Length: 170
Image (cartoon, rainbow, N blue to C red; front, side, top):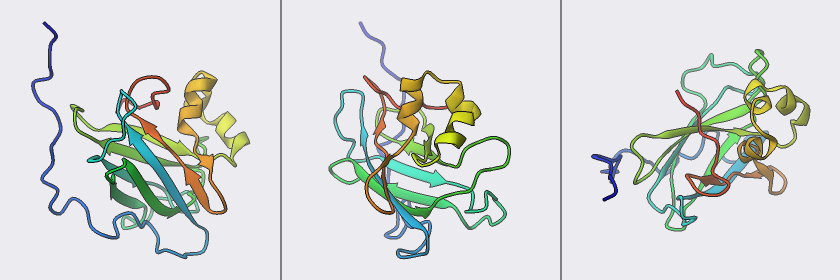
């Protein structure tokens, strides 16, 4: 007999967890705004229609000075997709390449999983980033978004299976 988890995160009572503009870290049309879209997939490769994606990040200068800046939250849609509108964060000054931190909450998980989104136009900074440099190239690639057009990036999150996204232990 296979063991099963004694408890999982969710299903969520979603009242108050999301709001219509939660995906907007910056207002639409802000100078330098980028739209990050993607799909959350479960371990079988199926879209996760009832997940929650949270992002947080430094400002464009690589600072966390303003506690009201940098947080976004988006529920996944019935097709598992999500979007966040933000600006590219600056490098933190400690060797880390510009990145957006991400938490994913989804059915079947015992706790949230945490990962990062790195930017495809930061090849040199990404090569020097301690986290990316410590991963095999094929695993590091799961943390780098793909350009999807002017001001747009695509970052799919795979919770398991082949090409699983790298998740961090906190």
